[in-house]
Image 1 (cartoon, rainbow over the protein chains, first blue to last red):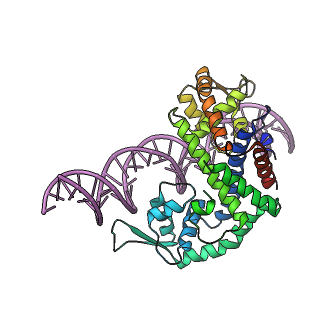
Image 2 (cartoon, chains in turn purple, blue, cyan, yellow; image 1 turned 60 degrees about the horizontal axis):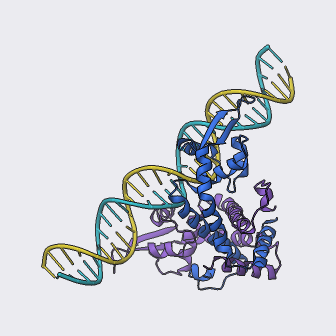
Image 3 (tube, rainbow over the protein chains, first blue to last red; image 1 turned 120 degrees about the horizontal axis):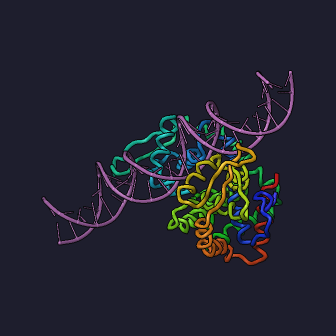
Length: 151
Length: 151
DNA sequence: TTTTTTTATTTGTATATACAAATGTTATTA
DNA sequence: TAATAACATTTGTATATACAAATAAAAAAA
């Protein structure tokens, strides 16, 4: 659906405005679909994100600011996010012995297991929308989004 | 910044995944910047959205489901959003005389005034990122986002 | 006309998010 | 060394969001 139909807009719209609305609406479609996948696993998108970051550490502990920095949307509350993961035994948390201000967060085997379970579904989700585009268009879309942001 | 730098990702990433992350990250940049503008007006992005929809009604009342339907992200709580606007005298609300299940929501002069104040800033915001693209690229980006979604 | 179904909105509750202030630790400087 | 500043994280609070259940009115069916 074109964005004008989505918003039931009657008046013609500036193309700059259309880009903004297209990005916002596309994001909400992507997120809704992804949350649908996560639902049966009882974790939120942000929690999944943290787990993915921790797996990426390949055994090295991550601290709070490192996790925060690697997240897409700056959540401002990594503590409570990690709290939730801790309750489900997806991560461990301990004070860093060298610098007791820092916290070392590690993913557990249970956390790795749930990610492994999710992996094929996540890949399928990532490719779902891209299937509508040719490989040239995919490259072009990435290029334009990055150029759009650069300022 | 390329999305890999944003996420400090070391491993190469599939282009489909890149699109998803690019859209999510771009949306969060757009929203952050827009919230910055709204901050001094003491309304949230969603509240602004409702006001814009009401102005688009050109004097005709809107009911709750109509507002909900026209919003980008399905908020599931138009009632409380309208509550907030009511407290600030940006809207009026009354029961529809023909069908007492329905609610008639109208924007007030005060609501119209704040929108008018915001209008130039909103336009500036909409064009801010697009300035990085040529007019052909702007058209192309809209086209690709709509094609990407279509499925 | 009573009962049932559908429609429109509101409310309850749990969780998420934003932002500022507070806490505890380490580093710097007077 | 004591005081101050910087750093890393946590906590408090207000608001936002998601989802289900509740309410209330109107329409349809028995």
